Image (cartoon, rainbow, N blue to C red):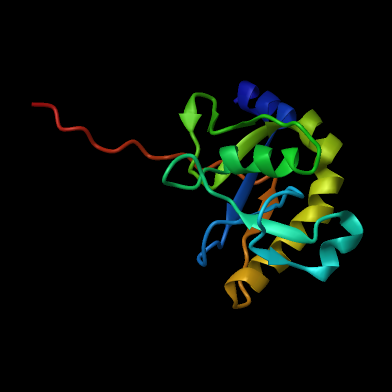
Length: 146
């Protein structure tokens, strides 16, 4: 229990949900063909957006978040496990000190992603992000021993 408390001070668990209309978006590089454009992003240099295409078939927040932050000019490592247990795909863990350095930039940019997501996909839903959530772990599937 004491180690878990130390982990909670050292790391922050981030969670994303509600991307029912496709993968979340990323800020587009200047030479990249964009999926959608939003005027609200113009003052931040975040007018153009592209769809995130994961390297695996399933979405993994631990892969998406570092790419999102890299496109904002930050480097962050995100992990898909905590205390040796694998997190659900829509959660990741980052070092609290790293997160606190870039948190305000993320919180400024991420609502623009939500706007671009709604513009690109229609509807009112968009992926939400929450920080300092309780970790949810993948439950091991039963193994048949014969």
